[in-house]
Length: 138
Image 1: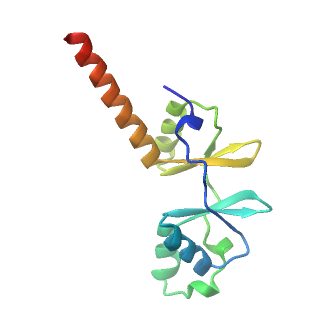
Image 2: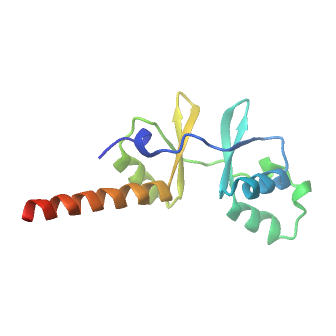
Image 3: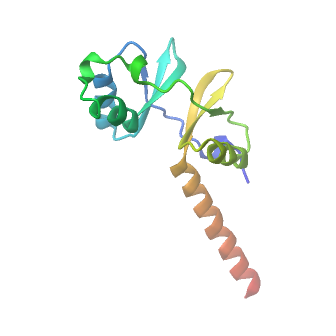
């Protein structure tokens, strides 16, 4: 079916761990993205999503500029390797009920794979298979 490297997004937006939740929020808005990877010395240490901001700041009426990103971030992220099979990534996301996986090689951030990436890939695969079946039946 293919490997994670075939469909992963390589341009991952990151932010250093010593920033505020406000900094992360602005980055999400400016880049039009739903999550950002938190790094320390260029190593991924967590994730912050729009959902985290709503649940941990807005819903609690906290001031984003006073909340550190380390307080906000999810530290328990899941990852795959770029050479892993796409099926394995799908299974990992389903088993853990998660929307994204970091792609790490030798503990270094190489990319990210999201539900959207997988949906696009699977849609293309289904369309191609459908066309092949139609050609074979004609």
